[in-house]
Image 1 (tube, rainbow, N blue to C red):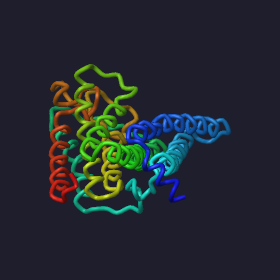
Image 2: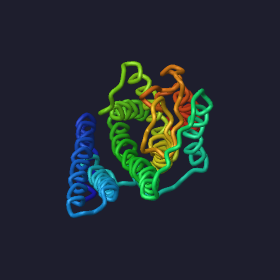
Image 3: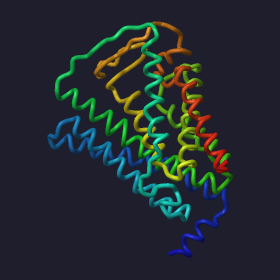
Image 4: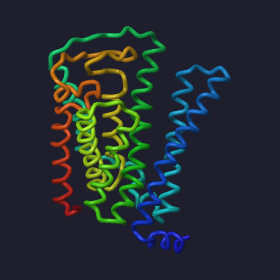
Length: 288
């Protein structure tokens, strides 16, 4: 077994990188399987919300197991070598996990606008909270960090070098986030910039801490706070959200427009500050 893993690790770098990218279509396939499973559960009479959440958790579990398998079969690495060992957290990055979305939300709700509260039923409120915490939050955060900062960053680092691997990983992450979104050119550029910075932040934190879990926490909190549906900040209302803060027309550059808070220049500035902090810590430890 050790000789087999060693042979895998000695593959030419470009082959290793190309093969590692197979994880992306594998994730799409597993999402389709999970959605089909959710539809089958609905056919037997289970509540629609329960079916959606069950499909999300099923997809998350399949992706996690697939990443661990491919790390061994393609990269010849143990999960710990891909920074996927037991969770360990650093106090600094736990604080940043809440500070980043907190700053963005506070800054945006201090712009001109007004509140709109949706009075949801108990079932609707439960569905929103569950989705925010477990679907947009934990499941999305852990799964995407396992894919991008676990497997792909490990492949890029070994195939090229660490700094180039971080940049390539972050660029790929930013492009993937735009799939399926209908945006103007300006909004697409703003989102690409933000998600590139967010990818850099998650990658640098992963390198600095030696595991994916701090980045997964940051990713989960961001997803729950910004996309979870508890609080929606934008130029148009989300009828499924518990609370909406509807921004006046202050320009897409400042508010993000229909692309959401992530496209706001406020989010870009806040993320840039934390990227600089993460880079400085990596530089001080001579990791970059």
